[in-house]
Length: 399
Ligand code: NAD
Ligand code: MG
Image (cartoon, rainbow, N blue to C red; front, side):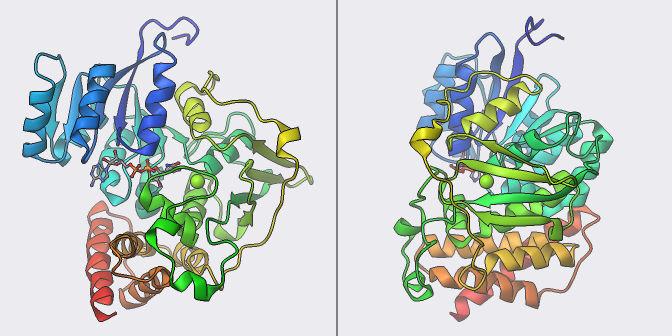
């Protein structure tokens, strides 16, 4: 099918449609009614917002969390052609449905793993924003991409940048092993506490932590950006997507967030992708690749940008980076444990039950406590996730 003259519209499922990535995806989709239509939307809460999205985009299916939410939504959508469903099986069903061409995986956290994996196993074009799914199940996930011929497109801005800087023909989990690559440079804004002392960070509030200097994002990823756990999860994500060992992925703090990441080649070349910090750029690339379509993002103005700065991350104030690297090196279920403990700790911080600087402590203690488990079965990964949540909760009750 030629994308210039598509035989039919590409049907898109958006998992996590009410979130920050979900909304940006719908913004790009709405700019191209000649290319895309919405097949399904899902959300966990904010039913009225979801109803408004349904009235605007007319999906065939919509999925919410509970029967009560489904009943409310059905009332709000009375007379529309959208079918309302609820629960985890319905999430998986819209992700793997034969009528959908592409799935935007934009649920936050471990809850996204099963539907994202279902989309992969159904051989879809999968736009991966939900990094936690890949961090939890890395080897299994990438094997499934290969086995089922899915087209995996990284949406995380850094990984999308790296994908754009890799040799033509490179496919995540597929062909084009990037042998000529020496290492990947993963840029990080440094988050809102980049210049804070450890003592000041001890008293940081949720409001301060979610106020990201460069990106507007959901609350969980915003806290992860403040602890640098986001960059830790992204380091693990980069290893799986691009077949790299953690030693070959270097984190570079770049406060302007203009260079989204870089690839260094064996011949001394370094390739970078630059742009204004706006997730619609990677989303548009994910939707249209190998083509490019307008995303509603202004071109970069280098004169207005002026300066680009770089510094090494401080792993003493931000231990999350070290913890993630060590978890990747340890292998097995360690990344899943790291992720689950982090989700519990971040939630406790947002609820004001945990100090900001105790987030990495809870994660480290949980990693120390749990036995090493192999990650070759999905059931073991889900067990590790559950055990880590219990252990992390126990840590919280001790504090
Ligand atoms: P968000 O909190 O704004 O939105 C999350 C979405 O997931 C919402 O639609 C919510 O209803 C849904 N959801 C939450 N819990 C769920 C559950 N238990 N079951 C089903 N659905 C659930 O988050 P976001 O900022 O859009 O981030 C989404 C994902 O994309 C995360 O994994 C994040 O790390 C990743 N990501 C986000 C950005 C960004 O700029 N926001 C950038 C890179 C990667
Ligand atoms: Mg990112």
